[in-house]
Length: 397
Image 1 (tube, helix red, strand yellow):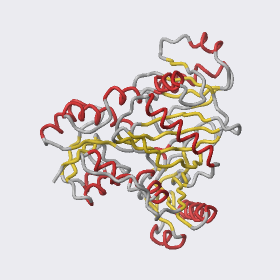
Image 2 (cartoon, one colour):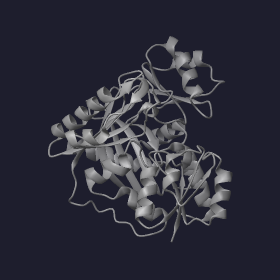
Image 3 (tube, rainbow, N blue to C red):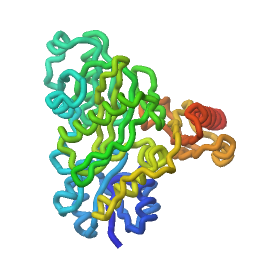
Image 4 (cartoon, rainbow, N blue to C red):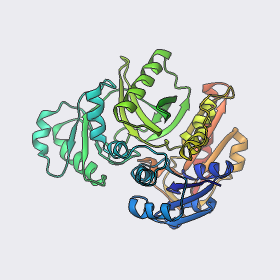
């Protein structure tokens, strides 16, 4: 039995852990949280900070694992790549893994390669003369941490006087205390999920997205199909393939967020060298495309055969993040009854006694609603109705 090492064992990683078990593999997992929910489903686990690549490597070597991967979190990408390199396992090359963690370097590489339609960006660190930069750039701009995900630390700046505060906020949310300043694009956001294997980039889907209003720009849900014209989807897929090549990503999952303007220009705004979060790998891609995304990722990581052929069994799928009203949970809804009432699936991770925070980033979500239907409008109606019921039927102190 081959052994898969999972870097991270949180809620979104449990879907990968469970699928690996279904496929007959042994699963070992590492997470800095001793109560990580994924530990329950593993053969073995250890409480180790997943950013500590050397400690994770020692664990992998001691347990003679056959493959290593992470999913739905940027924090495990470098560690998984490092272990793969040191042990001669399948994985994204270490240089590309490090590059993709730096949003400024990504923007620089994409601008130089003309992979998309975005102008140049600027990197900011604690020593940057922000007053000088404020006079150079054209507003509005977006300011983001160089190395975070889930919209943390991101904000729009409309006038020079706001730049200093936005940059400080972004740097405070960065592990390396750096931020990137880029042109603000007035467009609609979409997602793209791709998989790189045997030198080929498979762009599995372009996804419609719903986002919060400024200033947080956090995801609220996804859908397949995207609703875009065929020629625009084709342009997005070409940009994704060109970006993957420009960044030197040679193996594994690649998750991208893009903005599309009314004029049809395509702008890549974020890239993760791992499977997307928010049920993209576990539900949205399999339901919307008929591709066994997680299964293929696991098999490829362990050196086993894959099959990226979409099946005919694909559906219209819409998801909603459980961005619930804030408060302390006093009583839970009957989730099974809600699933039956609206014909949806609910995946949640909150309980009585938990504090629900105002929704600013993906980390503030309490779970997900997944809806499928014969028409797009019906799938949206089911997802929205179930979300509303869950929010109303969650009692708060």
